[in-house]
Image (cartoon, rainbow, N blue to C red; front, side, top):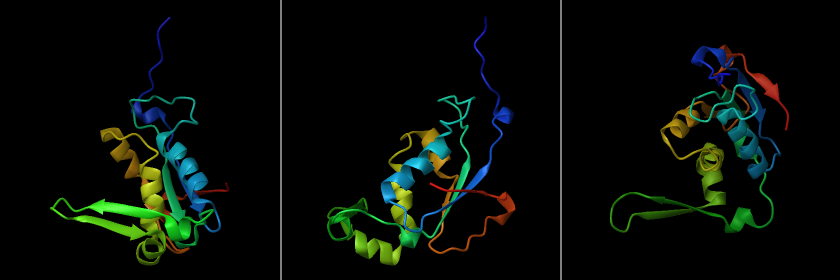
Length: 142
């Protein structure tokens, strides 16, 4: 008996549309990461890109529990001495609301070359309008 190994054209990729309005950040990011990785498919293979594309809208209206609105800190290092930058959740959601969801999902997928390819299939929009109509995304409720 031979082990079945799927080909790239057998994955039947789809595009999904997720509305983040009022959704909890961690639960939303977990669902998006599973869709990007492709864990729910029958032909899931860990060393192949078998996940789907995901479009997230209303990123500015995502919900966080507890005191994370005031206490959560995001860091970024520029690469220069003294270049550690820190942003509070409130400041980052006001300036770049798409960055919140992108960072949460990026930390839930593998930190490899394949993970970077998976993350390219994620599109996050701050409002309820998106420019991905040609993908014909399927709405998913969490």
